Length: 214
Image (cartoon, rainbow, N blue to C red):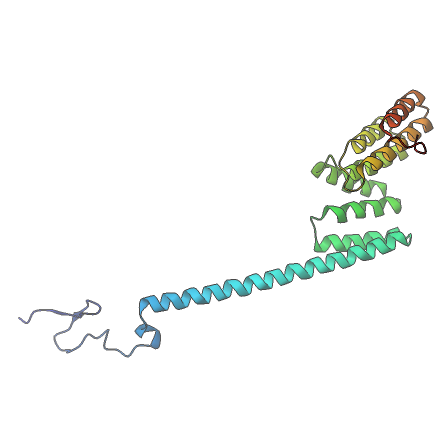
């Protein structure tokens, strides 16, 4: 009996009636003849190109989203300055549609809602911002003013104090003095003269050595 023959390339048994391996002797495509390392390198290059193209497309998309958000935000600012709060709040809503997590856009939307007389909606946005940034001076001041409009003395005072000791991005000392003065005026308006006097004393102690301010 003739011993079995095996293909030196694939190891498959060669039938007795065939001279060559039936598998390896078949015509193969171009990629089959490429060395394994070359094929893997080619696939790696293709993947790199794919990720670069995908990253570029994603970056371009996000840049376009930011540009649209900034454009709507600028329109909202212009409408607020033109005393068109109803139009401004729609502009800020559109800005948020393109940049959902932007705190400034949410704050300006809340302020537009206040200007449009939609205080409950404004409070919802402001409380959401307060949950994220309880030390934000502007957010606390807006909440204080809403409570002051409804004559909620305790809540208004609490938010005013939060604003006084909160974080301000621009000219914090002046902002805090103005907020304390606004609180004192509010307390005088509701007949809380003693509390107003305490705020004015604290305000006077915090003033710089400027005769006009004193």
